[in-house]
Length: 130
Image (tube, rainbow, N blue to C red; front, side, top):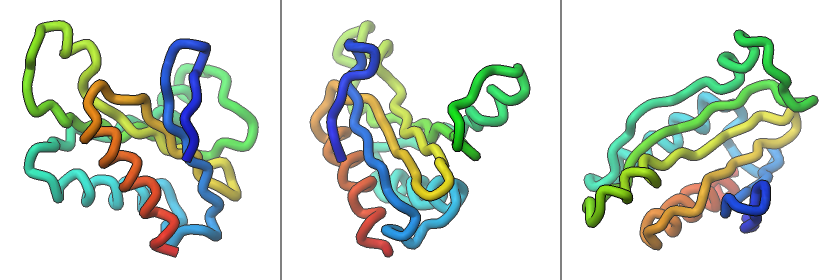
């Protein structure tokens, strides 16, 4: 997993996982995996899944070559609301893109270390499931 900046302002974590490196071979299987990880923590709440690929296809928007599916899994780690502004950085999402021979998993850095640690762990464990 690497940390990078998208458009020079969005701190992201990105993992490219070859399909041969994981037991999960579809986006739906990955969604189920992340939903199970979210459900394990009583302080994390699953919100939903947004099919970004279907939405972009429906409106005729451009899609990067080679992508066959793209979803966002939405959930919240919000343990507290220390300021009204904190709402701007919640909820969290993990993006899953199927690029044919690999998955690209990405998420934005959270303002809370436990959230980042959990999302990183969940994503790294995809490789140990092979």
